[in-house]
Length: 399
Picture 1 (spheres, rainbow, N blue to C red):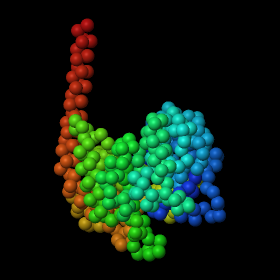
Picture 2: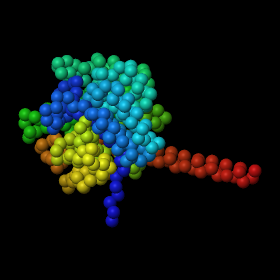
Picture 3: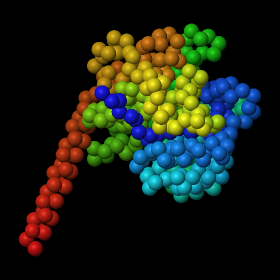
């Protein structure tokens, strides 16, 4: 039986590699500079940019998503991204391209905002909440807090009509404040929110997780409170705010595959392009073991479908018996593989197993009811469309 080849629908590009103008305590990517020898600054050349965009556009189908991340991708300067758009137009074949920029926001200004608005880029803004939360870990290289500058630029982006998602890293500190976080983002007008649980291995003691890592039980209670806040803001049965985790989980309740890779049965639906053209399996696994090749010598579509990338994706489904017998398995599929690796206590068991159990026990009945309502709405719409089509057909017949 032939194995179905995965289409190239998404790539993550790190044009400035691990370079960043912040020194966040919990950052996992700054240390990746060790992979690139004595390079002082890591910057994607115009040649590598063009080859990247050429391959992405020519090897993808009707739709493709390009995510620009780091490090800090705005270190490349705005002209770099103007060139990227030119190349997308040059090599595109009438497909839809979604560009996303994940940034700490420090270098943004009105000129950036006008560009992002003009080309309809989605911005993921790393803003960990109000000042007392954000500045706890998100410090600049001088050890100073970055909150005020990021918040000011968040307001500026919204004023310019740029689509912005709030990206919040949930740590041992911020997990205590779900109400404050939710209310803060709403007060700014950041109604699209993504909460990412942080777990990293302690650099001084590799037998345990770092102190800033969020515990499974705390994260579970955090999700439950956040879910209640999200639900309380529904109007006429519809959400007025967007929380990515809940929306991803909802897909499984209506029989669809979750769009978020952490909730998929197997991962590896995309590849990572580093500044020098090296290709890796995932941005959490930019390391020699999971290097797939270099786009100057290989095709992205072939590396996406390579044996190594397939093995990487399938590793997610290797779970202990407790998980395989769990009633919630088809809702979480063990979460992110990275969270097991970064938690040295038990590499086999998902770090946030207890979190998901707490959450699904709390939210399952509500999500099941919302799924039934959604399915009924879909049925009613199909019936209305069919009735409308029959009406027009009858009118045409009697003319």
